[in-house]
Amino acid sequence: MIDPRFYEALGPVTVRALSPSGDIGGNAEHKLLSAAPADRAGPDDLCYYEGKKAAVLASAPGACIISPAQAHLAPKAAALIFSERPRSLFSRLVAGLVRARTFAANAPAIDPSAKLEDGVRLGPGVVIGAGVQIGTGAEIGPNSVIGPGVTIGRRTRIGARVSVGFSLIGDDVNILAGAVIGEQGFGVAGDASGPIDVPHLGRVIVQDRVTIGANSTIDRAVFDDTIIGEGAKIDNLCHVAHNCVIGRGVLIAAFGGISGSTTIGDNSTLGGRVGVADHRVIGAGATLAGGAAVFQDVPAGEVWSGYPAKPLRKWLREAAWLSRRVSEGK
Image (cartoon, rainbow, N blue to C red):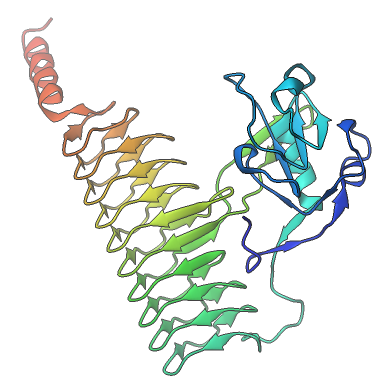
């Protein structure tokens, strides 16, 4: 479900009004209120479906954008909007249903609806949006911007020039200067007109006692949550992409880059400049040596290194073999 603290519903809108020039099957007068992923869409939701495995949708969406050849895969949809590029069309149409809450024009720097508990300290130039809640003893540094609906826990410290939006921040969190939490991630669809940004309608959840380093970025999810687990420590200049789940006690050294929809298990350690490809699973307690480029899932407790990354013992054997070959002039 899209969080109303961060997003405003613009509906109800009929399928025909939402896509007036579209090729529509089913009930074109069906009314829509929101958007959802195809596997969880309900009767008020718009979704899109690109069924690579030709699996029939079990959900019953209000409207599903789908290619004509796959129309039979959404038998419970109240309406179908036909397109050869469903994701691209969804990215265009969803703006007619949902929009992100933003700062009101000419509003005061501290919105009157914000709730600040006792002992909150605000630096000069801080901007706080509507519906923000900040817990006792929290500190917001100079020129930081806290977007509408954001919740910040007790004793949390936020440095100078930090941007936080679409996020729920826990207690005793430390966010260093210049960090950006909750911006839209890198999702791109394409059609004849060129690349299109895929809208992100999710959140960021930062649990208790997390540290996020200076100039690091955490992207909000497309529909659900990007999660930074309790006690995780993220160094300066790191990036966590949309839909990632970073486990409890995870350590990520400087310049770490975690691509979208990746899960990192509890108590894992990532050295400096580690890069992880999208949709990977790093098992609990794994260690990725500095500079590792991870394109595969890593089992729990293992140590991997190299480019591309592989188990450390294998990487060391291959490096030794290569060194011998070079020294022998072969």
